[in-house]
Amino acid sequence: DQQVKQNSPSLSVQEGRISILNCDYTNSMFDYFLWYKKYPAEGPTFLISISSIKDKNEDGRFTVFLNKSAKHLSLHIVPSQPGDSAVYFCAASVRDSGYALNFGKGTSLLVTP
Amino acid sequence: GAGVSQSPSNKVTEKGKDVELRCDPISGHTALYWYRQSLGQGLEFLIYFQGNSAPDKSGLPSDRFSAERTGGSVSTLTIQRTQQEDSAVYLCASSPQVGTSNYGYTFGSGTRLTVV
Image 1 (cartoon, each protein chain N blue to C red):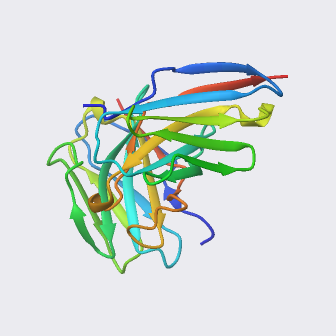
Image 2 (tube, rainbow over the protein chains, first blue to last red):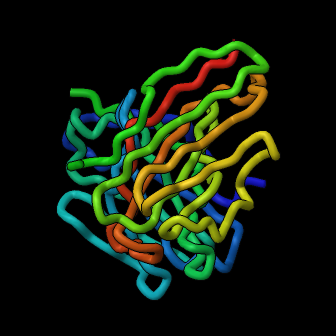
């Protein structure tokens, strides 16, 4: 049962524009959310996170928005750069679970020059 | 070491054979996690360790899968009598302690297992 869903398998954006990656979850117990970035043949790399007590977290070009009522979060990358081309995974956890992460299937982002 | 190290990076094995996958976490990290990514799927949680104990084994897909951790450091994931559906990239991650989610985990590059 997929509790974290990334419904867009791929996204193509022009360099300099905004990239918006979306993620939905079904488990209302999730209280911590993370985004990971993965290049081919490498392990995922932590990008940004957000606690359920917040609705926005910003780190440089990356901003994550959380809408708890809609069980939806999104990652905004502004401005997008070719080096951002990678697979982005959304993940969620429940504090009492030992922080085992539930991952989505990923969205492959391509930033074109 | 500086990062999470996994070996081997690639493993091809015949159906029915046993395999061992190794993970060397970042020195001092007490929490260690195993995930796998099958083709076209997200990362699937398998098991985590706090020190040498595994409080949550719920993700192990069958009793052919087992894992251990010794000395609070190296962990081994063992798959017995491998099946073709075991083919996946097996990823290990570590963090300073369970519950340190502010910066996520640090993942290794994974072991790509192919069962033929």
